[in-house]
Every structure is written in structure tokens, then in C-alpha cells.
Image (spheres, one colour):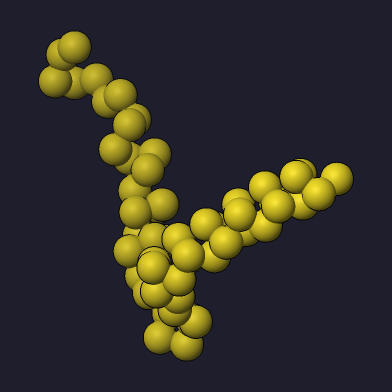
Length: 53
């Protein structure tokens, strides 16, 4: 690839980087451990419902 060609990879993702880099101070924050615990509990609930049905 010559130095005069632009592949567009970095430029096309520049808007997403700016979007995800900014944090809203009013946005609700959830602890990652809470998300993992909820996922595990949901999985256990699905397994229990499958065993009962």
C-alpha cells in the first residue's frame, strides 16, 4: 500500500471513538459484577424452568 492511499479504516471509526469516549454524567452506571451476577441468576432460572417443564 502506498502512502498516498487511504484505507479508510481509522477515519471511518473516528466518529464511533468520539461517541463511546464521551461519558454522560447523568447516565446510570451499573457495576460490572452486578451484570455478571444477573446473567448467572438468569441462566440458573432458565435451567430450573427447563427441569420443571
